Amino acid sequence: MRFITKKRVAAAAAAAVIAGGGMAAYAYFTGGSATSTSSPAHTGSTTSWSVTLGAFSGGPVYPGSGTETGTYTVTNNGSGDQALTSASATVVSDTGGAVTESGTAHAGCLASWYSATAGTPLSGFNASIAKNGSTTGTVSVVLNESNSNQNACQGVTPDVTVTVG
Image (cartoon, rainbow, N blue to C red; front, side, top):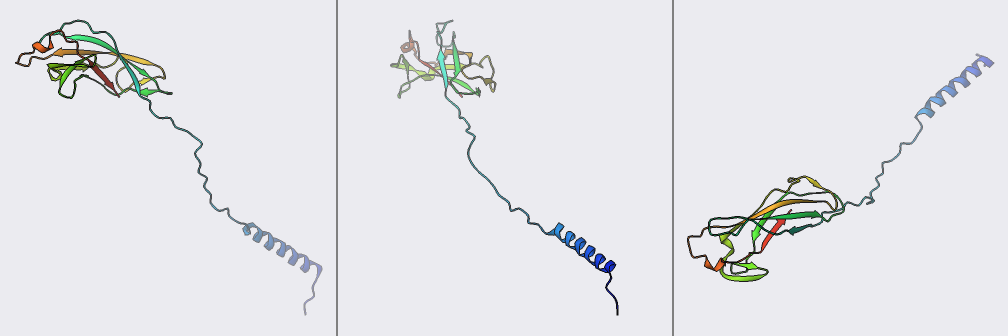
């Protein structure tokens, strides 16, 4: 028969503590996953540009000759920087195609006889225009030769629209 000695009791107790401690190293919970979604950040949006036309000079235009040139100014009315990507110009017409001057149509003078061209603004395209900042460009108008009687356009100062994006 074997006797239980103090040494054996101490060794058994130490083994139990070590085994228990080793088990404690593995006795834990892992955290579950969690996701939080909210909308704390507010992103702005684009704002329409403001476009103004200056006086035209250099003319008058005649069928097939002469050019009138003016200046357009584009202002960023937004709350942040915006990039100007395009500019185009047109001679305004009524629903029948007649040129308008101060909103009044001139029968027989066709807007299609005119060409309007918006030049590249000083900032260039795709350049960032700061809030309340502006850039300028030129717009040119010519009266093309139509190979028809264009007398109805004599003395007319056509309305011009510059559209930017």
